[in-house]
Image (cartoon, rainbow, N blue to C red; front, side, top):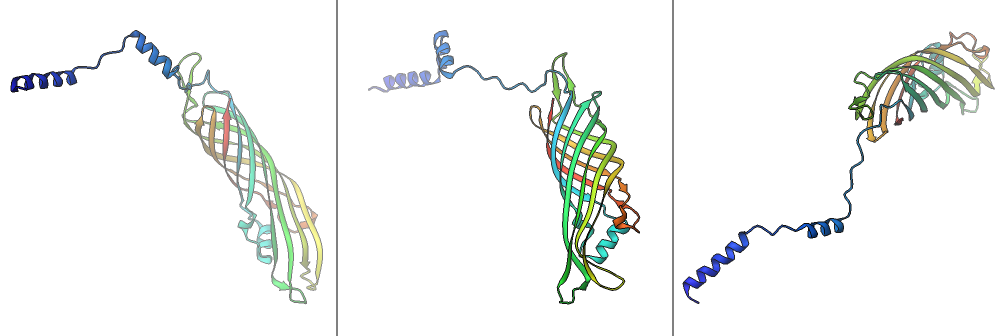
Length: 263
């Protein structure tokens, strides 16, 4: 092959490689679309109207302040510390929007703790510890108002509403709690140092204010993760089994996490 013919063939190969690929015609494009299947539209990232409320389920930790002369006496005489009364708790809550930022809320709380102990400075005549159990139950309900400073989201039309992915809030209201404080086991008579078995119990209701704060974080559509902390001021009188003590302090905090569904 001569040099000129070789050059012509080479140029033809280069031009063929550099030429743009042939576009598919309508028939080919239609066939390709049929082979790939129908296009999948993403799920809409908006609500058809602003949410009207929410329902939440949470689990967490009840942290009683456990102050006052009753808890001081118990912790001084028995191997019990104030932090021993911290207990797992369960909470469910229902809320309804009054305005875009203000809502009414109501909830139910459940929590209890049993502590096993013995006397710090006394033992039986056989040298064995003098043991007992102390059980504190705190169940109740709350009703109040929740304020969301940034609102729930943005309305973009009459029927479309884009929710915020993160919604912090604060709240306040009243809490009514049923309590039970019970001790069972062996006890020491401080007059003659005798040991006797017995059971002591006091129960009743307490009511007081609470404040709270928390945040909702969107997981998927109307499902949110929730973190919440609440502090309540509560106090109640004691029964005759605990005569001489100035009531029982039931104030404390609840920290909880869970899920909420907006509807």
